[in-house]
Structure formats: C-alpha cells, structure tokens
Length: 177
Image 1 (cartoon, rainbow, N blue to C red):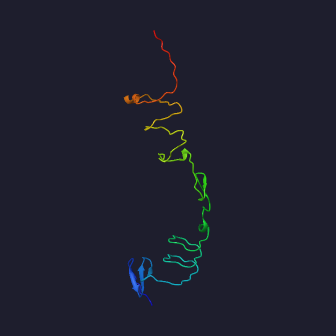
Image 2: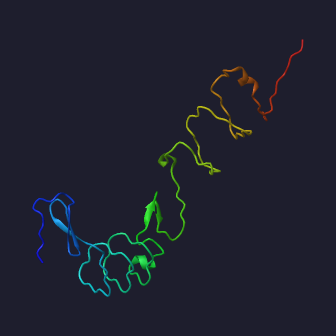
C-alpha cells in the first residue's frame, strides 16, 4: 500500500494509515505503532539495541550495558557472582582496602580539612591546636607542665576569677625589728 505523505508537513504532524501512525520529526517521518506490539517466544542473535521492558526468562549470554533493575535469578559470572572482596584493592589514605574487613585510617593533621573536631573524639595526640581566640572551660584544667600566661589581665574580673593550686614548697624568711 502506498502512503501519501504531505509535501510540507508541520513539526510533529501526525498521519495515520491503517494501524500505523506516522509523526513528522522535522526531517523524517517516523512510524509509531498504534498499540505496543507483543512478542512471545522470540529468538534473537546478534546485537539487540533498545529498551527491553518486562520479564526476561531463560539464558541471557553476552555483555549488557545500561541500568539493571529488579532481581537477578540464576547464574552470574565474573567477579560480581562470587565477590566478597574488591577485585583490585584500593588505598585509602595509604591503607590498602579490599572490602574484606574494616580498616582504621589514620590521618596526619596536615591532611585534614574543616574547622571542627567531631564531638565523638574522646582522646587525641594533638600537641598543638593553633591560636585560640577564646576558650570556655567547664571543669578544672590539669597541667603536667608549666602554664605560661603571656598577657596581663585586662578586665577587673580577670584577677579575681583565678583559682589554682601551687604544690611547690616556697621558703621565705621575715626579719622582725
């Protein structure tokens, strides 16, 4: 059956002939079935390109590319079928990781970024914290070395809010006249 296409169709113009619908894309007429075809017991060889929707039952052999959704029942070959570890281990901050066990990644302070230490950190080997502009302390501070304060008190409360214990013995003498 010959199809009589219009000579100057408009973009997305539709022409229906029999059970087929044709749509003008601007450069070519493309056929669109009136209803989606249904196939049963299809055997294909070669390359299948396009979307496959619905259930696929039986053996599928070859490479697949794209997004796979849903359950896979049956045999899968390659590393994905038996993988309990990564096929090739990766290093995370110098620690080899293949996925078989948890790892502890230590990090030099110079490699860290951000401005806060996580509140779950309960101990640290920090030897310096840089310059503190202010420090709020809710409990006593214990120092196992000398504490040096390099600034004179500026406010009236600075001198009165000091509480410290000096465990050193101090000897002095007083001359009475």
